[in-house]
Length: 473
Ligand SMILES: [Zn+2]
Image (cartoon, rainbow, N blue to C red; front, top):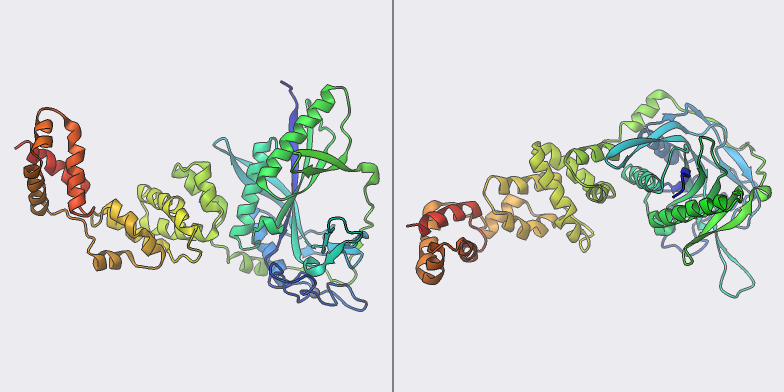
């Protein structure tokens, strides 16, 4: 096998979940809107209109900086990136070139059981373009400007990523950060979270020529495209060729990358400071005030989950659901003991996920989950009963109320259990003989009978203990 090592840098475009667009008051959610209905003179760039900066987008960037362990620029400004394309009504994009709002951060990823820091060079604010569609066989294209002016943050990593696995973990981690901070809706099918991958290979300490894989929108395709591109570059070098610096696309059906544009064809965007928008100065007290609204970061939850010995898949289930993390954090502070906290996690990644598949409006709280776990722990109900009432609790019932209402308290009383067991022994002479002649396996049958007669409400360890005692008499 080859000695070539990949080096990967990633640019992520995350659409911000603000109410209105980046520079005008249009509704920023067009998922259910007809084409060209969420538009106005500003986002259509009609003559005489002026943009106004959306404060909500600035606040989201300030929050993101905390998620990325990064600095917020105290002075930040916008620039024009000039290009002509039919999806851009202005003929340019307002972006940030010289003074991005976020700089010098990092994201921690967990690979092979160890945390690794991936540098964030910067992240900046910009506006999205409209959307072009090319109807099959038609000699025209259609343009929808609903998306024109949607706020985006472009998150630019350092080239610190050294494998496909690390790239995938990094994308997942950034996704967790933007969604858990409420900054991005994370709907990848609707293009909320897209990325470009810069990849090169080298067998020395000098970096190789890189290619850029454009516009991927799923973690799985990122993995496939990177594996393909790394293998392609190795094959080119092994056969004595050279890697061209170029932009490549990903063809999902053929599972190949293909050349789109070479370096020679790269645009000169003639960037210059945006004359219609003033630079923004942010005070430290304002930054602190916005960042103080963040209560929990996904990386802290991940570290908690690692300490509870959860595997990466279980961690990802929780981390992809900000609302579930909130339940977990509340349950954690109510339960305190690690073995009980682990039980809370088991509920949340197990039964809770199956209920979520059908119940889109769950009412589970961390407090109630903790209460349920404590009811089992103190022997008031069996774990089987806990499972049977869990859906009701997710639907909003209080655990102790539902146990009282349905009369589900566990039977732990010795004399009550002894009476039941004695009767079962009398009714089943054959298994009793089997047990007494050394077949310990029939014990399971007897315990099952007790559970059946008590509708699962008997305390299993007590039943075992009493059963063995009475069978010996
Ligand atoms: Zn508008």
